[in-house]
Amino acid sequence: MSILNLRAVEKRYNSNSVAVINIDLEVAEGELLALVGESGCGKTTLLRLIAGLEEPDRGSIEIENTQVAGNMETVPPQQRPVGFVFQDYALFPHMTVARNVLFGLYSWADEQARQRVIEVLKLVNLTGLENRYPHQLSGGQQQRVAMARALAPKPKLLLLDEPFSNLDTVLKDQVRQELSIILKRSGTTVILVTHDVQDALSMADRIAVLKDGNLLQVGSPETLYQRPINTYIASFFGKANLIPATCSSGEVVSELGTFQSKYAGKSGMLCLRPQHLHVVKNQQEGIAAEIVALKFMGEHQQLKLKIGTCDLWCHEPIDMNYQVGQQVILAVDLNQIHIIETTVNF
Ligand SMILES: Nc1ncnc2c1ncn2[C@@H]1O[C@H](COP(=O)(O)OP(=O)(O)OP(=O)(O)O)[C@@H](O)[C@H]1O
Ligand SMILES: [Mg+2]
Image (cartoon, rainbow, N blue to C red; front, side):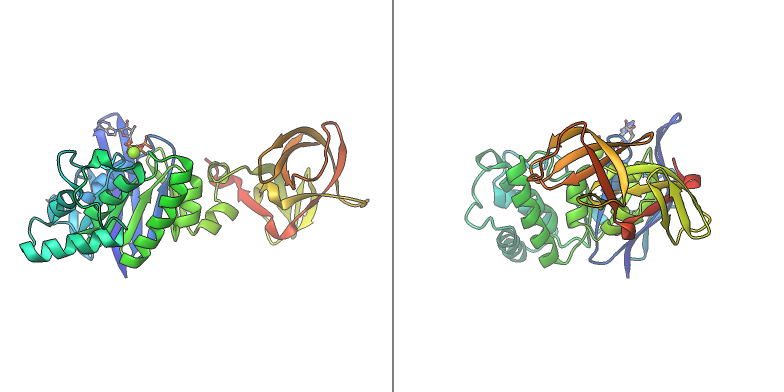
């Protein structure tokens, strides 16, 4: 069942700038959707529209099959079953942890609200810190208070705007794992805004990519990583080798060579991730290339290679000894070949 339905949603802040354009999006119950895109592409605006903090200029928004925006009708934010965790957590500095969490439960009976605070603080592993003030907490603990406050009224839909952006790498990994567990336990439907590709790929059931207010592609992490519909998305999710190719009668022809492929009749860009190109030893057959740069990346080494007019990237184990200027033979993982049709490039 879909819990959120956006149809042709559009928002302008002033006449000459459009923040989001013609957005159609459905989110299923229990799903975690990551919303990604570069700064200024409209991510926060979309969350604010869903929460009711902004009104769309066009289109409609339904939550649980009830229209909350569109056709001159608007349900105010406090009447929408939506929780919001803002980028800066927006905790009340003069209130204790327990008071911060209690804040969203103003319409609950006292005893029920007290029980819910205890329950939700247990859920986010903050039992015992009820009487601390936000400045007495670490960044990760503050983030969990904000989560507890948003989850307390049992929202159907939880909107998280860059929840990890204030955390350092070590804390972020820990909080990301904790958050995934908390969200699965609570069964809440979530839209997670992030500009971090790893957050999106590792946490989301589906990812939606926004660019300049347009929704470009929505799909599983695997789909967006392995079968992006344009070169922008291919590069957004990590290094991609993009090589012009023509495809005819079951063959892909490019500077990398000619391969059998199901992409008959399509032309565009061959898209191949660096881990799908391999240096092969003691082999005559393959693609001749020259190493033009080497970079140590910790878990692998990144080789920049030249083949004809193309520069390519390839990831190799760090224990392999390569030199700049070395000639190598490459093999392509043929199962991983993806063609981006030129007509849908942006
Ligand atoms: N209140 C506002 N008045 C006018 N323009 C605004 C307002 N809020 C946002 N914008 C503009 O709308 C566009 C989308 O902004 P938005 O905050 O939704 O981007 P974002 O994707 O959340 O970016 P970031 O990753 O930097 O948070 C931007 O061009 C921004 O300058
Ligand atoms: Mg934002």
